[in-house]
Length: 212
Image 1 (cartoon, helix red, strand yellow):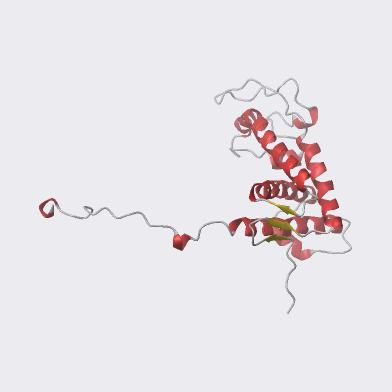
Image 2: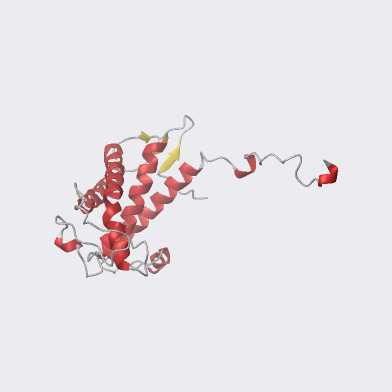
């Protein structure tokens, strides 16, 4: 019986073992560097906007390739996937909201990326690091999937080795495989639903006024 080799393993002492080859780590490093370039070192300055405005005002430092159309949707489909519309039926409102919250989103992404970069060569990591890995892997799949035009994981079943994007699709599948293992390892520390204490019953609940 062949057992699937796991790359992310919970050790008896609670640490998480990263059992990845140097080649796997090199591929991940390249992907994370790409994501870091997409997020950038600074977030474009938000424009002045209120929720009831018909459209957001573009910030003076907004990059031209991010401005998109008149509704404020990012022209780059990767950015549109990383910063999706909160209200799909109202792109202008969504663009304004995205303009206001993007700084916080980018700050969190930069922290997660820094954690992953700092632990790419590590043998073991802790749960906090693993959560950062999970966030980054999710973003990597969004980027790769958007560039490949992948709409769902079922597309992997039609893999064609002669496809010009075959290598990229293998990497996309690998990031999904790795993401799933991080989910499994982190889920191991969650309490079992059956062991959670049920709320204590109110002793007076269900008594009629005459019974009290």
